[in-house]
Amino acid sequence: MKAYQSEDGLYEIEARLVDTKPFAFQRISLPDPLPPGEPLHDLSLRLTVDRDYVVRAVEASSDATPYSLCKETESTLSVLVGDRIASGWSSTVKTKLRGAASCTHLMEMLIPMGTTAFQGINGVQRERQTTVDTSKVPVQVDSCYSYAKHRSVIQRYWPQHYQPDSE
Image (tube, rainbow, N blue to C red):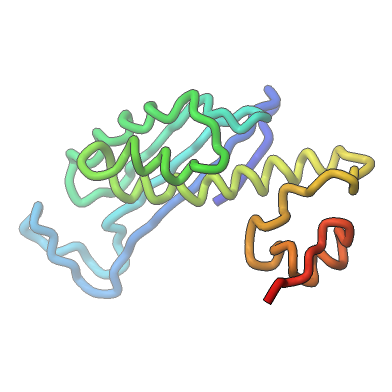
């Protein structure tokens, strides 16, 4: 997965999944097995998001799939346009695309693309930022194991937000 800022100020988040087998794989859709190392799936996704993490476009490319019908799922992803990548992104993606609504692999790729968007966009925005307001509670607090308010990372970098473990 990769994140880029485009010339128009929007951000492109790209992901690719290539599924190969080290052995000949018998597909039920074709009489001949897929040779070792040839992709059963070769899927690419691009999310275009704005600085507020709102999805402006979703594009998919299914260069290798087990069934030609699978390529039709590329158009199902447009239901995410207008949604915001934020807390609950995984649930939004699963609710709109689970089961027969879309391709399971494309749906599963979209979930970590949200994290990639945060990392990429925040990286660009931080690079432009000259000062950090340490009086505000950073979004990192309690966002993951290392950033738990009772852990050493918070104690070191944001001591005013550190709270010793109550146990």
